[in-house]
Image 1 (cartoon, one colour):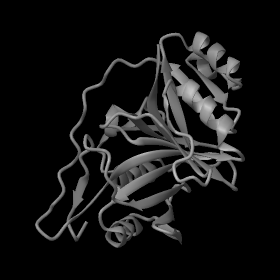
Image 2 (image 1 turned 135 degrees about the vertical axis):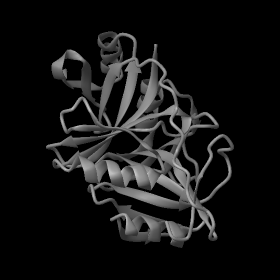
Image 3 (image 1 turned 30 degrees about the vertical axis):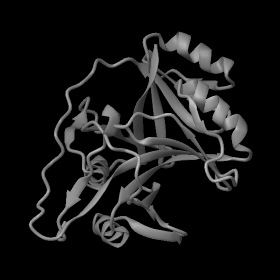
Length: 257
């Protein structure tokens, strides 16, 4: 038994307070445990759309996002993923497997967590005209032909392939996702393989301005979206609102937020 459990936001350095503060406010999720384990390394945020488990983590390697796959038997699951072309990297303290996909991304196989109660997102003052935003997609950036990448991640995450080529240009593919969880997309890229988040908004200018106040910077405007960089070093995108996720409730931000 396995499932895509969520993701870890790996932040290079030791400033856990800054990392948890930025990502909590950027995603509109409460900080549930500011120092999980009392080691100054992990901070647990409230569950994201779809009940996804989201944490920030202080690391020594460059900042990145990594996916967590939960399994009842992590050794059996690691064996299954090796059969798909992944490789084992390490087994820290015997509690989870760090693995590398054939597409280049690191991810973890972790023990199944019992369902945790959802913590309500903090209320936002909406006395002034407001805009909306929400975590809408997790995007697996892959170099080269998306075909083998789609096959691997579909099998690894146990998700059907919705589209191998969304726009007919070989740049985007989509895996199945529930109405109340973010899209799971694959993107063909020229840069190194990684995972990035998409934040959807009904007001691109207002949302990028809000994120800039939190410490993010604008990198580049591409066609219909902004590529931004978080103060933790992660690239992410702010995209225009689009239909299709009726089960996700967006955060509403007052003009002063």
